[in-house]
Structures are given as C-alpha cells and as structure tokens.
Length: 281
Image 1 (cartoon, rainbow, N blue to C red):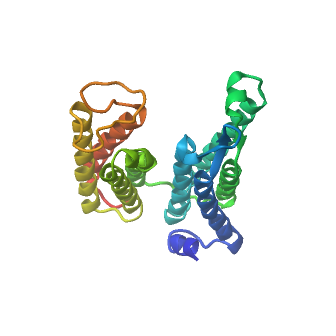
Image 2 (tube, one colour):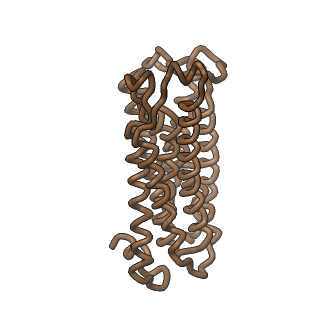
Image 3 (cartoon, rainbow, N blue to C red):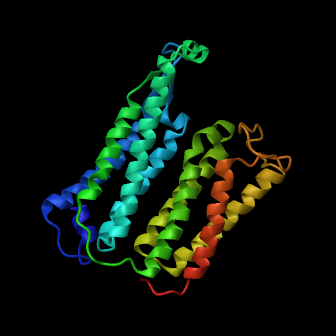
C-alpha cells in the first residue's frame, strides 16, 4: 500500500507482483539494519561478543538504509532507471561488504596464526542476517523502470540529499563511542544525524526554500562546533577516545569519518545555496 501511494500519479500503474518487489526491498533494508545490531563475531573463545556497531558493518547498515530510500525515490520520481541503478548499487555494496566480512573472519579462524589462536573468532548470526537483507534489497532490480528521464533539478536534489545522508549516518554511527565520552556529546550526535537524515528525505520528496536554509544553518553550526572541538576541545567529553587521525590543536584529532562528514556538509551547504529559488523539478 505504501509503495502504491508513493508511485501514484507519477508513472503508469504497476502490477501487484512488481509492487511487492518494492515491499521486499524495503523489508530487506530493515533486516540488514537488524543484522548490524545482532552479535557479529565472538572472540576469546566466546567470552566477548561484538556486534556490527563495533566495526564497519554499522556503515553497511547505513548503505542498506540508503538503498531503501532510493527505492522510495524510484517510485516517487516515476521509476527512472538511473535511480533504480543507484538502489541496486547500494544493495550490491551491502551484499559484497558483508560477504567480505564473513570470509575474512573465516580466514582468520582457519589460519594457524598467533592472532587466530588468541582471539579464536567465531561468526555470530549478524552477518548472515545482514547478507539476507542485502539480497532482499536486490528485489528492486525486478521492478520495471519507466522511460521517464531524471530531471536536472532532481539530480541536484539527490546530490544534496546524498551529502546530507552521508554526514547524517556518520553522526549516527558514532553515537555509541561518543556516548561513552559524554551523554551530551552522544545525544548531540544523535540529534544532528537524525536532523540531517530528515532534511535529506524532505529535500528528496518535498523540496522547499525553508529546507534549503535549514541545511545551511545546521551544517554551518556543526562545522563551527567541530572546528572548536578540534582546535580547543569542547567542555564535555574531554577524555577523547578517538584512535588515529591528525592532531592540529589541543582538541580531538581529525580522523577519516570526521573529515568526510565535514566535507559532505560543505558540499551540502553549497548545493543548498544553489538550489534556493530553483523550480521544484
């Protein structure tokens, strides 16, 4: 029913079987995200359990959510083939990334190295649940595309939404470790991430000047806060638990997630400025 409403009025009606493919893809994203919070691997002869949120699978969960969002946009925009391709790529990344994680753990477990004997890694259900979700996401391939071309205005909005999604999910993915530093810091990351994902959805489906200005204001505020955190440090979360990165001040080091997040926010600000006043295409 949700898929039918999304596509209503934007493209020729789909047969029920194709609408069900969209529902399967959406369910696949939920399954993949659920897999990321399940036990991913146990170490030290099963005495310690790590979930996907203790490593890179939390970013695969974000890509799964992006695949679901692209599936919704595929219907909303009249089923242009380019959007379906992007949703398919997201699903393939989830499947490929999860499969590589499974194979890498199995390779370590089967080796005779000191690391293997010490850690004794064993796979949990998480990777297999995420893999199943990623495969279900691929159901979008079975939905026929229309001949509708993607409007230029939609491409720009998709770029802006993509930049917002990247930085928003990075904020959400980093919530657990920042909660360990400070409740205020962890909640701040959560609020920032949810706000950026909400703006990405709004700009994709119902663009408005208010949403563009909100992007500029939010991203600018987050860049300023990050600059203060790097140069001087914030008054909370002073026991920095970030490993690696480049130290440029007395605050936290600049690591890859932080740099990528701020780069995406700068791109988002530029795109938001450029989109203000444009037709809603």
